[in-house]
Length: 453
Image 1 (cartoon, rainbow, N blue to C red):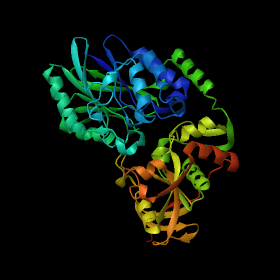
Image 2 (image 1 turned 90 degrees about the vertical axis):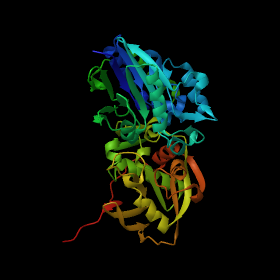
Image 3 (image 1 turned 90 degrees about the horizontal axis):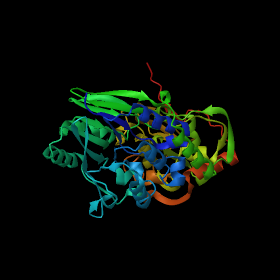
Image 4 (image 1 turned 30 degrees about the vertical axis):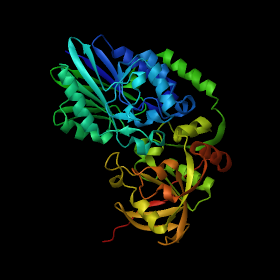
C-alpha cells in the first residue's frame, strides 16, 4: 500500500474553538498508524484570538499532543515577531523544513533545527520532503519585512535534486504558495504538492502531480496515499472524535486570557464566512469599514475582504474576543489622504485581477463613506458623502496599516499616502460596538450598473 500522509494547513483560528481543534487532533489520532506521516503546511500558529494573546504558543498544545512529523512556514507564522516564531520552533516536536526562507544571510531557524529537506521512511519507502513559502511574504506581513524568500521554483529544483541524490523513492513538496502550486507542479518532478495559503479546498492533478489544500480553520484533514497511484481523500473534522486533552488545554487558555468582556449585542446574526466576504457587499464588511471611518473621522474607509477572518456568526452578546476574531491582527487603523483620481483607482483594484492571490472571482473591497457602481470590474461612478467624486479633490481615508504597506492588494495606496494612526483594529471594533451598537445593514454602497436594452 505504501506510506500515507495526513495533512492539515491554515489552522489559524481553530484554536479559538477548543472542540474543533480537539476534533482535528482526535481525527489525526484515529487515522494514524505506523505507516502514516503527519505534516502541516503553514499558518498553523496564527492568526486568531488566542494566537494574538499567546503569540502563537497556543499551537504547542496541539503540536505536543499530535506530534507531527514535519511542518513548514506560512506567512502568518511570523505574525508575532521572530522571537515568538523561534520559540515555537524550539518547543514543537516536528521537524521544520524550509528551502527558501532566509534572514541575515542564513536559513531562518537554522539554530532551531530548520532544514531545507528531510527524509522519512515508512513501510520500506523513503519519502523526501521540502518546504517552500510564498515569496510575497515580506510584503504581506510587516513582521517579516526583512526576510529573504527566494524564488520557490529555484529552491524546489535544488531540493528535489538533493533528495533524488539521496535515493528517495518519493518526493513531496510542503507548500505555502497558494496559487503558485500550479507553476511548481509544472516545473519540478514531485509526486505530490501539499499546499495551503489559499483557503479554498483542493484535491486535483496538475500535469499528473496531485495538488492538495485542506481549506482553513481546522475544518478538514487530507489523507494522501503514496501507493502505485498517488491519491487523496478529504476527511471532515466535525465527524472525528474529540481529543479532550487538547480541547481542555485550549479552554483553560481561553479562560485565563480574560477576553469575555461583552462590548455589544447583535439582534440579527452577522455571517462572516469567507465565501460571503469575498463575494461583494456584506454586513460584516460594512461594519468593519464603518468602524474604521468612525474611529478615524475620515471621509471614506476601505478594508480588504481577506482581512476579515471567517468564523461563527456574531450573534447575541458580542465579546472582545469576538472582535479580535474578526480582525486578529495587532496593526493599527491607519489614516491617509488620496485624490479622487487615486480613490477611483483603488476601487478599480477591488477585483481579483489586481491581487496576487485568491481565486479568480474574489472581490476584495469593503468600503464606508462612499457609493460606487461597477460595470463588471470597471468603476462606473463614485459618490463620496453623497456628492460626485472630484478627481483633483483630496479625501481622507482609513484602512489597516497592512493596506498602506503591501503592494499585493490595492497597490494604489502606499506609505506615501499615510498621515497617522488610531487604535489597533480590533480595539476600534470593540469601541465602535460599545458606542454605536452592532446593527450593520446592506445599503447598496457597492452596486452594479444597470444594463439598458
